[in-house]
Image (cartoon, rainbow, N blue to C red; front, side, top):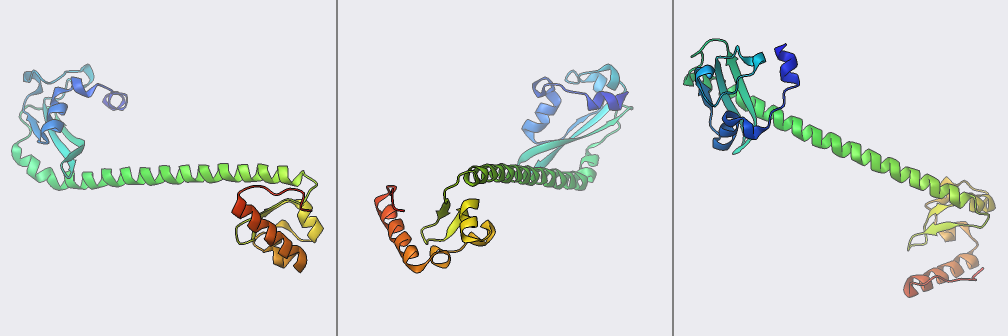
Length: 199
């Protein structure tokens, strides 16, 4: 019953004055008798708790969690328990930080994979559009190296698209034609305007 209660427990932090006080002060709190402390909120499922020890789990000066120890007898905990539990608290801080970093990395990897998948889908759709056009279509970088081509060009050159990509116009076309292409490319790059009717 208690486990189920804890798993589904949600209570605003501003209503939990003890927890809020520990986080704000960054200091441990020892409740010798919860039934005698007006700050303690008694729930039916946790009414058996008579002693509570709050220890802040810190990373630097920042509280990233709380370690709570409960007992059904009043006066169970003493201040010396805080010192004894400090190594455990330090280990918990490292574990929580590692978990946070792991989650950040996992989220980043997931987002990157999703972005890569979206990009692949866009490229596949673009390739389908290019392949449906009967004209020769290919993209080049400023060095004249082809970075994308359609099936019409591949069929005309009797090559696969994979073999075409990465090659320069000089490697694929007759010398005179390649030189004219280079000339047209330079004019377009300098002017920043498209050039039509060059075939």
